[in-house]
Image 1 (spheres, rainbow, N blue to C red):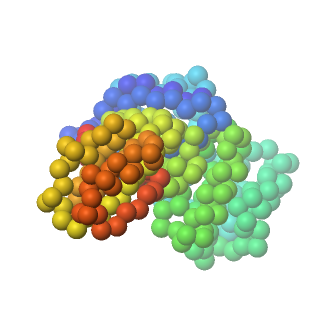
Image 2 (image 1 turned 45 degrees about the vertical axis):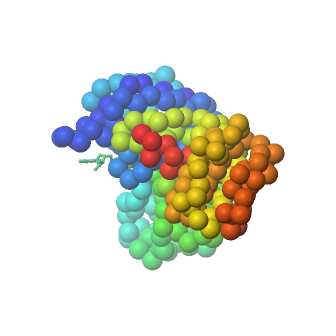
Length: 300
Ligand SMILES: Nc1ncnc2c1ncn2[C@@H]1O[C@H](COP(=O)(O)OP(=O)(O)OP(=O)(O)O)[C@@H](O)[C@H]1O
């Protein structure tokens, strides 16, 4: 549905995107994760026809974004990082205004607006002006605005940034409910969010894609499926070479904290045996996308 090929974009001397390629299949939710300034927003703004690329190609449903920007825009709903909403409009009027702008026929517009207000749980605030809304309500109305022309594609830039945990969770559930119906791109700094929602995740750093895969593939490739967190009594007595037994995928020693990742829990007794009485405490946890992100960005 979306094909990005050898995309480049610079702002003066800053190379924001340095030859990136990826695709999003129809009905898929692709996450883009990366540190600040990695180029995430630049990439999605080019796909949404807000920025022009310097080089490379982006096709949306077979249409080239530089040749057919109007048609492409009509297929995309875009929630920017900070949606610029018309403050004095009521929620209902804002949605009607954008519906008209996108050419939603008058006879279906009222129903569509009511449906969207219900979908984002804002029927009771429909007639209140935007400037009375909290950040969470603004995000909800921003998402409703992005959906007003019923686009097949939804692009969300940090939809839960700065929201309290309960509101963030309800927005995540909302995105999850749209899965399959819409082709989606989600930029996020929250690794758990990417893990929970995304079919595949692209890791972007300094304008380059480090890897793309399902959260499971990425975790397994980098770290194995389990991580042993060991608190040591005397880190200077640890010989890392001895711990590199078969099945161990990654070892990190930081102060008195030792992290060892592996695929199969059967090697745990071997490792504990090697460390012997130097072990103060042990904890086992599943490898997270956070681990993958830190490891990849550190090594790039
Ligand atoms: N309009 C602009 N003018 C100049 N530099 C820009 C502009 N937009 C982005 N950049 C630069 O391009 C690089 C990529 O920025 P971008 O906003 O795409 O990153 P990001 O991954 O979305 O970051 P964040 O996670 O902080 O939102 C950064 O170095 C940024 O400063």
